Length: 413
Image 1: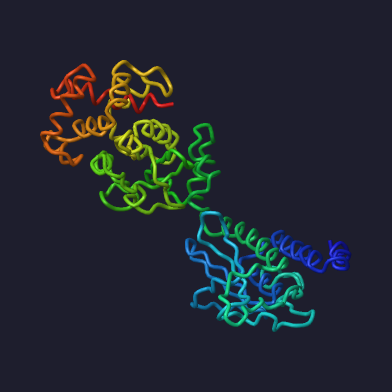
Image 2: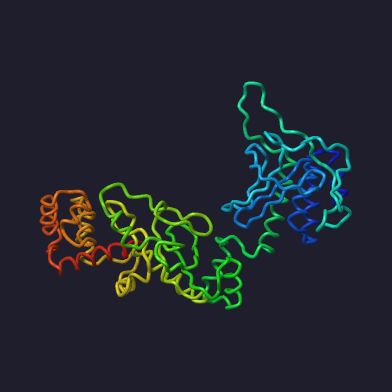
């Protein structure tokens, strides 16, 4: 590697420097260096202070160019070259080069910017290292607005290699992987995975193996697992289905579901349909996952054409969940569903109106829900009964209507 770096340097100094950076961080990784050693290596190689901040794991490491750790509470400058530790996380690694409050970029000269404790002791200082890029960032011309500088080739390689090594150390030493780690979640939800593997995945995800948890099934997202917080209105308990029905089953613009949802570990849930499995012991999460996927089929888009709850809890479905086995996705819709579709095609207001009368306690409440006068609602219901062919203002008729609306969602492909 050293010979290759030398030959490349003769042809292209940046390419040669990049190879030396790769070799340097490879040696640190092989020796299982810690976070401070990695940040120190980045600082000394770049010739400017380096800073690692991961709020989720409460990590804050800043190292000067002479290898001395000197943390600071000043916020990072957005103009500094930086790399995010993960696509969804908040951890960042910066090189304090350029911008206000920049470190002494370019002040380290000569070939011997050696980290303390150098000479191969990676845990304390890392292998002997030479400053590879001490060039300051170009300053904005007078009258120009400073823009985000493009990192030099060497800075970019330093950031990428250091961040990769830092990620491995964080996952290995900080008790848990990111709560959204797809591979760990997949293991946890796989009923065929050995129990020790699932327990290991749970611990890495920060879950208490003795406490209940729930699986989440977003329509357009990866599976999620959250610890259960049974106390109402706190923790990770999502709004109950009923509250979403009341706010979204109208012909008004649908509410922003993401705004109704509390903060969860990992990346925020996207607005959209969501099935929530029942709270179970960690080793039973594959069952919760299956229930969450079933609950997802009972959700609606929350639009005038598809009114209803966008989040459904499996443990709130009760016996209604049996319908999921009778009406398969993409199957031929039952006759009552076909009648609904035909009627809705000729009366666009019909889905919202029918949903309102099945999910409210009275016709007056239904009229208020969809913001129409009571007499208007009566006229709509009379017209709907004519289109559907059965009464919908009797208890039996409303039950039949409720089942038809539910099967309409289940029959979707």
